[in-house]
Image (cartoon, rainbow, N blue to C red; front, side, top):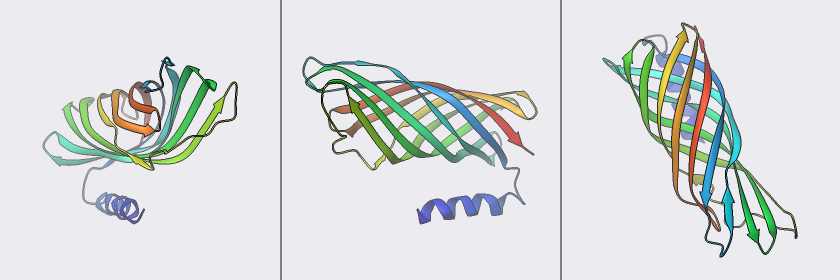
Length: 185
């Protein structure tokens, strides 16, 4: 947590000397998971994310895209001994992606996101159940596009892949999402 505090303090202290762009963002995401439960099926669920983003120019059209986002990563597993399992994991995400701007109004970003688990709600239709062995920190990878409609309003579309386990029997989450960004000036 100290790392996050130092990162954000550094970003804010650099804003006087650099053209850091800050924005408030919110959006939706739809994800699919894999499970190792025999005969079980999975289905996609829609989650939300919201928070702040910052773009720190490094050189020419290259820069660092970071921020702090609250993200819900839901999933559904059906045909289990516990019936239908509804998974609602929540994370605080810190993107560490590189953004390449094609123009002042468009760019592409890619890189890791450090996600800290905050909530692990699970409900089952036939029995009581709980989340087992939920990973405290996971690292999804994002690839996306960033563009602006107006000087203060923009949007992002992204694909996210979270390799490995989120918890026992839940792994390899693939997500597509979209966000609206309101830039602060």
